[in-house]
Image (tube, rainbow, N blue to C red; front, top):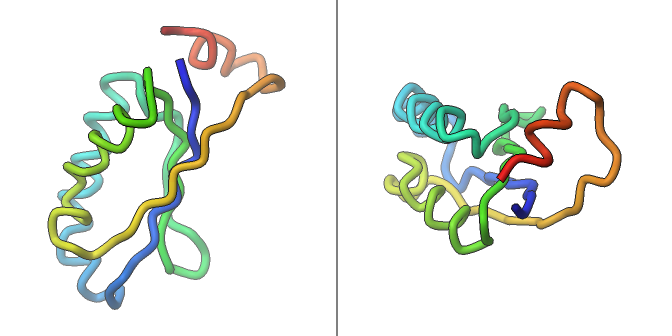
Length: 99
């Protein structure tokens, strides 16, 4: 399993983002239900968001976020950074090591 920091950058004013915020959060729940996402939330200031994710490949995580309502509306850009979590809190052990 590969791990990623997903940086979501808004390309429109936050007022536009708010129009699809509930849909975006419902979409993210799919990732949580599939055990793909560990955490997510908005950046401060509100210029985008961050998600910590895992998937079999970069292509899989990109495919997942292509279905994000923010992306479908053309409101965001995504930066995917793969990393190897070699140290982490004990409570994360299962999430990090599960396939």
